Length: 495
Image 1 (tube, one colour):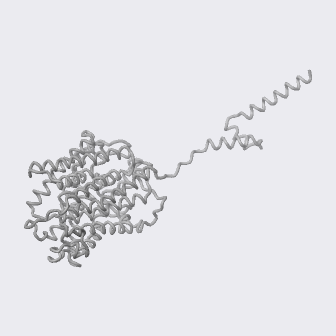
Image 2 (image 1 turned 60 degrees about the vertical axis):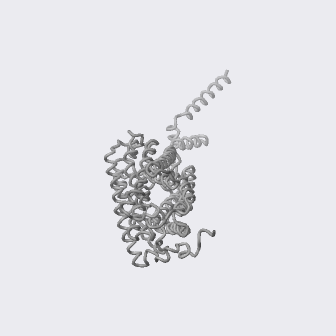
Image 3 (image 1 turned 180 degrees about the vertical axis):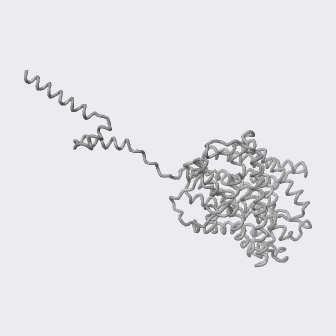
């Protein structure tokens, strides 16, 4: 009996001890502070503390899928320039100047690439004033493989190095577009000096005005948005939309080309002898490479591989196709025959027009904008050029200037959600903002006017300076001989 009572008392004591060690977490912590606990209790307290501690916020990291896409997009834009633009322009000049065009495009690309790394990126894409950035990243100072660049989604990033490279290609193609306006008559040295000046004082400020902002993560509430907006570029603050370069690239280059061809003068034999393209075949190949490369240009400007990138891809494809049809049928109707040169030019006109709108238009809006661009740009390179009498050799102004203006203003229309557009995203409310087409048209007009005036003034001063220092135009003898042999000691063909 004594044995049974002892056993019962022992079980009661053990049960009481078990209940004590099964207290909630707060009690476990209290025991830890008031007594010397057994080893199992210490382990239990450690586990509870680990669970109760707030989870560490992961450090921002680049998205690997977006990074891979941006590398591909950058390569595609390089393809646009060399060899795309070089062949497109080269085929339109006479055979004796083919090599000079290839050389000019190739070296302009190389020159601006180096300038971009030295100071261009810093001036365009760091915080400074409303018109120019700062010098914090001269020589790409401070950028490492771990540096990140913001995209258009909060918390999503790409490596800053690939953003540098991607934007480099935009800065390189823009001055190369200009040479089409005065092809076959300008000194190679004059083109390079002009490029340095124009790149520094026209391209970089416009890129900063249109594209520099603090990034989406800065827009947490209305007060933060106001503060972040005050650091953005001038035209960004005005609300001007330019998804991939309608103002920064095309209007900017088109106006510079127009000023150049007016100041330099017409080619010898203009409207007196044949100045026809020597190889429409080359031009068609170049236009095709431009079309393919333009997917990098426009879709890459989204900075992310997502659904919006797919929309931009479709818009780019449809606008170019519609503009080709618009130009070809306008030419067929008015001139009796559709030409391959017209088809190639129409495709480029559509690509130019959709560039500022590609991230905000719907597919039907892209088709409409493309059709209008094809017809309007056909008119500009035929009727307008003929009436005004300027010699825009390869229609840099007629396609890029006029197409860019049309696209920039047209963005206000096709972006409207009522017409199938996406509208404009509000990063404070994280939703599409109420859309006002009239207000947006005013913002777009700001972008067009500033681009036209800024590029026009800088271009005029740059041409004047170059003409005084080394002279712009080659001699009549050199122009008649052709720039291939006289400037480069080579010929494009040995027949």
